[in-house]
Amino acid sequence: MDHEQLASALRRLASTSPKRSKASHLKTLLPDIEAALAARVPAADILNTLREQGLDISLRTFHGTLYRLRKIASPPGSGSKSGAAAARPGAPPPVTASLATAPLEAHKPAPPTTNAPAQTRIKTFEQLQSENPHLSSMQLNRLYAEQYGEPRVSNADIDALKKKYPQHTKP
Image (cartoon, rainbow, N blue to C red):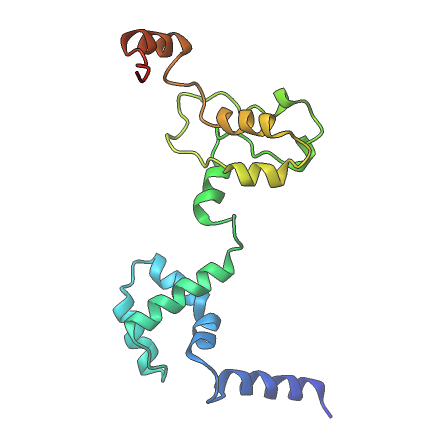
């Protein structure tokens, strides 16, 4: 029994099996489909080519399957948006477990720079809690708040508002 012939026969069977799903065909073709889409080839043209080659699929099924395959290809939390935000220069470094033993001041994000993009990914309280299980809830609240940078309203502004709009007690 020749191992190469057997492996070749199994690959041929896997690619030409009539019981193979449309999603598995698209999964195999995903890099080529992504390249065509990146080159601004319309989805309708890609579908026509797939139909000519024997894979009859609707536009809705194509987009839905493509969405699911992209979701599977990139693990949660490392989506293109958050990955791009983490790779940008000037973005605050992510809080990691290696920083978990450092004092709270070490967790402060880097000060924003003038060329920093307007939007950065802000972690939820739950994400910070899972990444830093040793911190108290007060420290986690402070860490969460520090992601927003400088507050727009100062304590003096709050005191001025309290004087301007005093709280009325119920009679």
